[in-house]
Image (tube, rainbow, N blue to C red; front, side, top):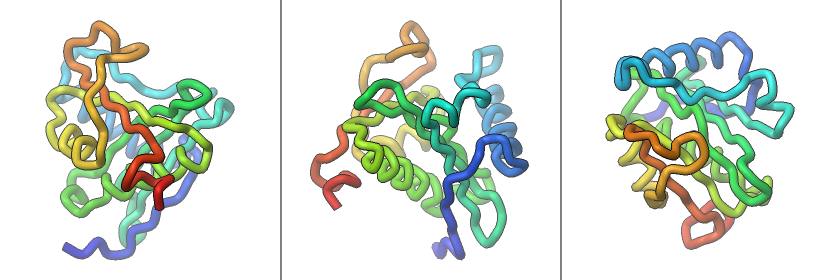
Length: 163
């Protein structure tokens, strides 16, 4: 299936399109895991602490987003991955994830971690197909019975640093 004109760009997390995408993401998380907390990012300090937010547009329409934030000197975390339901199945999430991996490599992180919900089977499949391996819960996800955590070491065969 053709992607049309897909553009990925780094942008602020407080613009109209990012705010709407994050609202849709939070609503989807709440539908999948009612009554559970949403592991959002603190928008006030996100960019101040080196956070990166990417907006994906397809034929001029906001189609998805993702974010990268610093966990430690050598580790970044992927956050807020989301593709609008009407645009799913077109490779947009894969493109966003690759963009974030290249950004992490450019910032000299050696690994990326992430968390997703155990009911989000498409997301789990995406991360596994992109070379992420399941790890024990880390940070705020320790003790969560709905979190599935992953990690990818950058610099291995096929990684953004290997290109």
